Image (cartoon, rainbow over the protein chains, first blue to last red):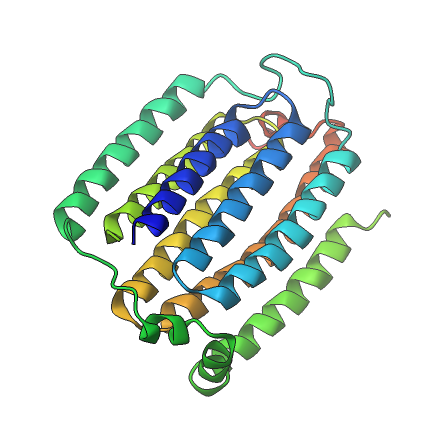
Length: 168
Length: 99
């Protein structure tokens, strides 16, 4: 049990530090690389929660595809690659900080009040729950209609992105 | 493990993302902060899936990952269009509708 606890805290601290790096970094490419750390940490947390299929989908789609898309976006918009103090932030910095801390305080108070002391019990049933065959069976039995709708949405997003980014 | 550990980590990531959306000027960085917020939600869903021993949470997380990929594609196309028209990826410059 304590191994999971240690792994969780190591990952959580790394993720929190990297998340702050994403929003505070003065270099836009460094921000994208910090985002990779957060996404990989999230994938590791899914493995801790015995959700192996979600974890690998996270690695393939987020770290594999989305981050590459971000790097292309950085390249195509010719973002400043050098460290440029303040050029990436606007002047709502302190207002944003107040809002974020307020929301964080409210959320933590609510969560401690609602779920304080609730435990996740790890068992063989939990491991078989996240197994790929189980997730696949449930997608194609219970969630077939949303699955098809999502595929249409992806097609629409593909066509939309091509139409938007076309040059003429 | 405590359920709250995962939920509070997710809350922290969400608030960091919200700060990024508010404080960042560059369009690509705003989209990255939105990804942080979506990931926080996914951690919540998977944690509740393990807590309730119900696989639906994991499937919702999969759908959110798919929709996030679509959102990034369209979002980056829009940022590219802003860059092409205004010669800057800064969202502060998009103020044509301001009175």
